[in-house]
Length: 209
Image (cartoon, rainbow, N blue to C red; front, side, top):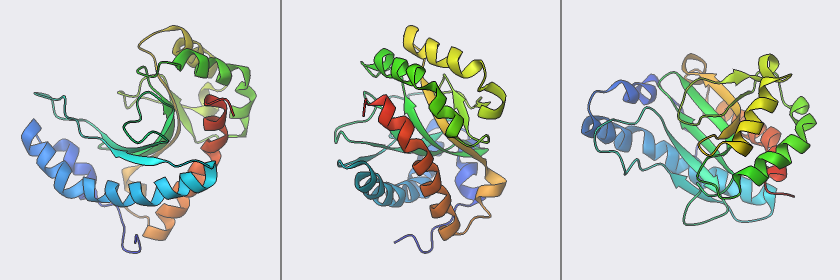
């Protein structure tokens, strides 16, 4: 299914197109077909590795009326009707990076409980690769590398996610576009699966497994 799948600079350049309508048209025609393929493949992958059915959710950006989206993604959750209320995985793009993450965002009703579980098992993050990153704001491209923030900023970010309503938590891998466009289909799939394997233990703590 993905034997000819490859990211290109054209995918990332969608986010440089001016105007909401023009950018959405390009996003729909250029990027979403790839999210569709990834959604099918990795919903199956996560279902088989986590023992429950996962569903893909491609970002629609339906609430936007003026500002064009600066990023887009396909998310994966075990809830067919949505993903924002639960911890979820994502594969997505900014104009300069591709990201593969697991996230809790502020819409999740149990956000404080899940952040507290991560604080109680914070040593689990020591097993993640140093080049992984984390953030407390899923709407910002700014992230903190684990090798820089593991000692103090990680705990602070999780505490804010627990205590501050509009705070999120995400962790995973950001890959510069110039590296992504060099990857073959097989190389990208291998990288994605390796990243998900690293993140699954974090997800399991989030959901209380």
